[in-house]
Amino acid sequence: MSLTPTIVETLARARSDLRMGLPVMLTLGGVRALVAAAETLTAARLAALRAVGDPVLAVTAHRAATLKARAYDGDLARVVVPADADVTWIGNMADPSDDLAMPLKGPHKTLRDGSADLHRAAIRLAKSARLLPAMVVVPVPDDMPAGGLTCIDVDAAAATIDGSSPLHEVISARVPLQVSEAGRLHVFRPEDGGEEHYAVEIGRPPRDAPVLSRLHSACFTGDLLGSLKCDCGAQLRAALDHMGREGAGVLLYLNQEGRGIGLANKMRAYALQDQGFDTVEANHRLGFEDDERDFRIGADILRRMGFSKVRLLTNNPAKVAMLESCGLTVTERVPLKVGLNPLNAKYLDTKAKKSGHIL
Image (cartoon, rainbow, N blue to C red; front, side):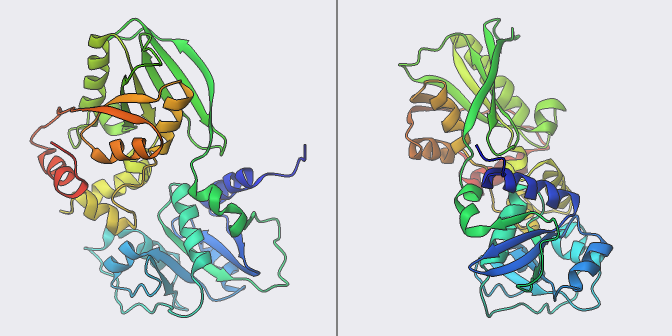
């Protein structure tokens, strides 16, 4: 076996580099560019990038709409970075925290000619690293050496970036729980070096019958701290209690915090909610979609555990549709209507009106 990193391993390196503020080199069809995450870029690195070429800031169409910048490329905008702009300007363009207090003065010039494919790949890479989807992109001359930077061939990496990484069970062990002494925790690790996911098995559910199951996305604030801004903690405990009463079930605890945008970006969204925006509006101002989660992960875990049919504990029809699109049969949607309180009533109303939850 070769000791050369695979594309999966190279992408993991790239995500780590971006989180530390180090640029990555992307290539596509003979065209090369240096890309750096707006939120981790330093003044010294920006100066080094400017010595190579003229930077543009790639942002999603959602963020561009907030900035009132024309998104000629449809799903994204390539904003020209002014010659006198510093890292603070770039950071403010990427992060909407101070949009209302200090509105950015436009108009912002955006590019409409040429390909945006490298910029599109850069944004996808930022999202996979749980960073703000705003990337500084600088074209690279053909004769410029990589200089030790991580290099990604976008064509070779496309399927890996957009795909769901294969999972492997690392270990399982008995964990007696309050809801059932017959509890077992399974730990699954993805091949791409990402966060591990867990399956809590209650009792011994038969593999040839529909299993009572819940796909629960991690919520540090709700599950652990008892936050009243959401209903996540209440749903987690109610789902486990339901499985305990029936004597069997599987709760999948998926590390997709904040609907897949990560805890830091979720806190950014919370700060925007304090300014009066709802959950969906806050995500859009950050540059994200309504929901960035990948429910294929849950389907993969259930299949690996030997299940093909589920009774799904959820209020979200999208979870039902995703599991069925992955080849699983959802024999029943089991409602999970808990956790309403005066502080999350608007949040739940947005879930129903904008995300289609049945409440």
